[in-house]
Image (cartoon, rainbow, N blue to C red; front, side, top):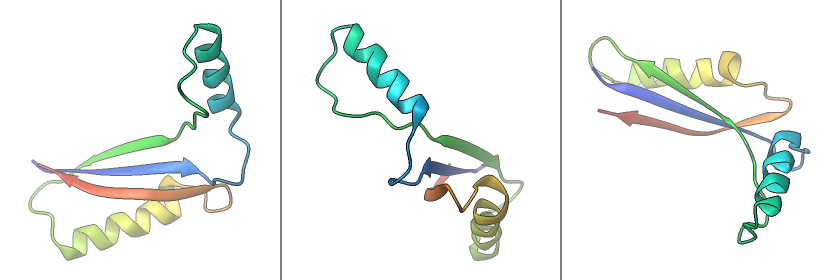
Amino acid sequence: MPTIVVDVMPKAELLDPQGKAVAGALTRMGVESFSSVRIGKRFELTVDGDVDDAVLATVRQLADDVLSNSVIEDVVGIEVVE
């Protein structure tokens, strides 16, 4: 069965406290090769049947209306994984 993966990230202009905490932890561990960390959400939707344009349109609508908060988040990716 195919899976559709939806990735959601905080808007770039907003503070990401979880990302800052992880970045601080990496620095304390001596890992200094990363300038910033941002943390988002990943949703995996298993599809019963084939993925067609109608299913993808439904997922896009769900991503915008249910899976993300458009005020503070962006849907950054929708991908079909077989």
